[in-house]
Amino acid sequence: MVRTRYAPSPSGTLHVGGARTALFSYLFAKHYGGQFVVRVEDTDQTRLVAGSEEALMRSLAALGILWDEGPDVGGPFGPYRQSERLSQHQQYAAQLLQQGKAYRCYCTPEELDATRKARQAEGLPPRYMGTCRNLSSDDPIHGSGKPYVLRLKVPLSGVTVVDDLIRGQVTFDNKILDDFVIVKTNGTPTYNFAVVIDDWAMRITHVIRAEEHLSNTPKQMLVYEALGFSLPKFAHIPMVLAPDHTKLSKRHGATAVEEYQAQGILPQALVNYLMLLGWSAPDGREFMTVKEAENLFTLDRVQHTAAVYDQKKLEWMNAQYLKQLPISVVKEAVKPFVEQMGINWGQGPRLESGVELVRERAHTLKDLAEGMRFLWQSPTQYDDKGVGKHFSHPEVARRLQTLATTLGELPADKWEHDTLAAAFDTLASQLEIKRAELIHPCRLALTGQTVGPGLFELVAVLGQQETVTRLVNVVAMLQDEGHKIPTF
Image (tube, rainbow, N blue to C red):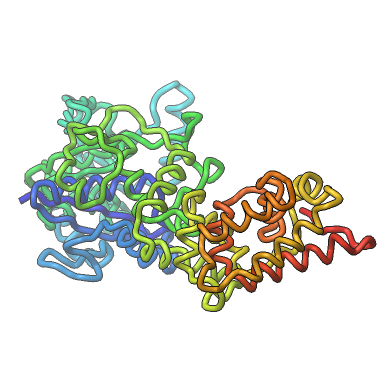
């Protein structure tokens, strides 16, 4: 059975690169009817951030990346926190030491630093030179109490070949690999040692991860070989770069899943966008659910070059989801953003009606909430250019007052699009003006804006009493010679 894993360090939030790696690993496992495991790699206690593990899990779940085994749900190969597996790591370290495949290194940080600097001065790569590699078992230093690390004995010649499922064969000369540390002075394992034991113990068959780990893979393969473990298959996914082909950072837009959520990006849109960062469906489709992608995902369609992140494309995709998802789904998603604006949407127009009215023009849930603000809050400021253009005509106050009277006299049960459109047409004809000369000042009076949803749909949702009240209030401001219309 195919078994993959995502193994984050709880040192921060779930970022774009990590989310995409988790997604690809999940989709690969599910495509082949396998299992997806989450393991928390928390052995480096100095990097831990309180609440990070919970935030990582929450973000994965929000994207629909659900794990079969993990620290919260358990499983047959736990525990699923690396720090809880220390005894097993120490057991295998002792085995390698006993077999002569690892050795104690007593070199101090100062001695190692001096060696590195000397090699760099000679133009050589900074590597450990095996100072303690051949210490005899009866050397007095072993009983001196001096702190030591454990290092793996790396072959001094030959090559290590990574057979990567995306990149093909990648060859590393063993000469460039020093005898790397597998256990620190405090007895905790290093990443390259613990990850091998954990992946093997959890029966991981495919290690799918970011390309930044490719340089670690030959070291891990040497640990597999030393322990006599069978190798999993490796696949290293190319990086996600910013539009300018630099490392993706906050200046290019949000980089963490929680930040996208705060921006008003739907999880359905974000996970769909992540799918397309470096992978394409065989039929070329752009829109798909996680479940649909499970049936389509294979590693041979992962591109070999870096994917380029595009905030505008993400927002475009989010806009499509806002238009296409059921009103009820969008309503629940936008509620927090409406409430953040201090709006009591329980009074006045129904939230569903507002969503239906505005969502065609929104790119994010924030846009959507802001676009609906006028339904529950009368404008206190008006578009400056709009005021100059639509409120400057000497007859505008009289026209808006006549419009308010006309709309106020409509039967309440006829307050709908077609009746409203007919009322505007009739009044424009009576006033001998174009309908637009009523529509534009009316929109500005009701919303403070010069653009927005169709006016008759807008007025229908706003309601008769509120519409008339706002028109009358604007007329009063226009007729007050000492009053200046507040603008923004």
